[in-house]
Image (cartoon, rainbow, N blue to C red; front, side, top):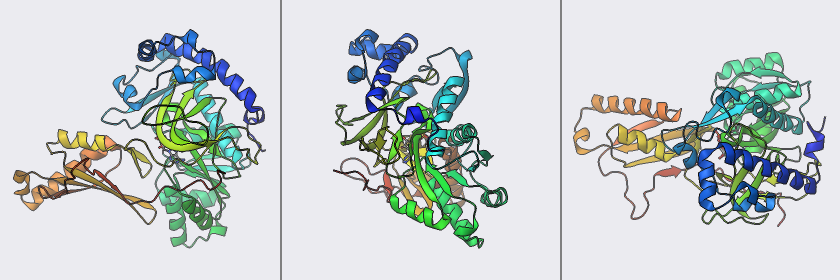
Length: 441
Ligand code: DLL
């Protein structure tokens, strides 16, 4: 089994473009007729659905951003009656409001097919046993890979994240051949297995499908060695369905974007100008087939390069490099998206000044997450136990906003360095960006 859907995955580029144009015309009409905030944007830009004749007119459409979704929370971008939807998934917003994505059954099926393509591209067949150790629930990782594994016909172990002892026991007892989780959790599992005396050749795994956070080529090599597997990258975001928007094949040279369902563009994040293939810039997606939550020109804020270089796997879909950074300040900590603005919202609500610093590092393959928060003079005079109590309360409030708990350290007034220009809110000591060596210049 080389492809999950051979005809689509190997379609000539001219046919892809024709198909995208036809779908785009219909999708723009659907969105204009059913998504009031987007209709307003199009009207403001002076574009009507009849002005869009194909992909060549895409640049005329306005962008959508996470902030637009926040303003229309929760249902402003819903494009079908709610009774036609069967599911929501959700991801962090920039402040207290999360992004809620809606799916019809058709949307779920297409999403799962994208994940099935990823599993097959990594060598998966119905004989495989797929251990899904991404989180289940609102996060798209668990549901997406679970559905993809079903579609391929693999035996699926819906482990969700955490509980490392049980992960290792089920992997060994049930003979898992594929592991799906964040790369940092894969590295942690490898380490835990080593501690338990399980050598790489003793585990039944042959491949892993890892994504949801940045990881380097060096990390790929380390995971491959410590687990004795091939490690493949997978990319996606909740707003465009979830994992499977793009996936790596056995060439391990960039991720193929499922272009029959999405149009990808690279723009200059500052001007919004569309950049030619091969340029580094912000990735923008248009969903061509989604019914319930069809975003046109959604700005991912992920910086990468697209390439149409031929791939040895025979797939014609364009490839993206690993994301090389973000055009906003979003951090991904232990697989969870965190915005400094969310932290600021909590601090102000809890009566603190916005003098804080976030420090992120990676120790033993696991992210550390510390927040230093300045006390005011009055708090500083408190007893040690009162200060400890305050720290605990802040950790709880942060956990409720972010979905993960940082270590909070209350520090003396004026002890966080003031900068002359923009405050340095984030100190990220992890080195997560690698260049794409496979790209020819
Ligand atoms: O992280 C979906 C996903 C789940 C992808 C499982 C892959 C595997 P969100 O929580 O909405 O969705 O976060 C989306 O995560 O804009 C990127 O910044 C980052 N991201 C996702 N995949 C990768 C990857 C899921 N392979 C945001 N490499 C995106 C680097 C990634 N960053």
